Image (cartoon, rainbow, N blue to C red; front, side):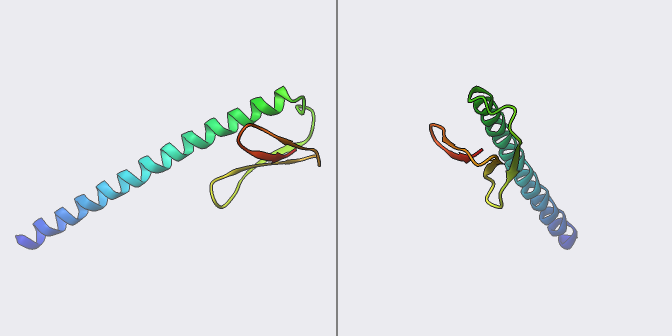
Length: 81
């Protein structure tokens, strides 16, 4: 009986751990989506709308913008566009 209770407790902890991990990933996903939308708006404002651009997600969770060889700076980030 104690083993079953212990196993249920461990399984419950695993579920809680997975739930927390999923919610962290969802928050990160929302943050990256907002960053992507902000970058898109900046690019449109700078008139680079017609240039070929590709957004990529780096290993560290940062968005990078690749396209023509012009460089510009925003208030917080540097991009190659």
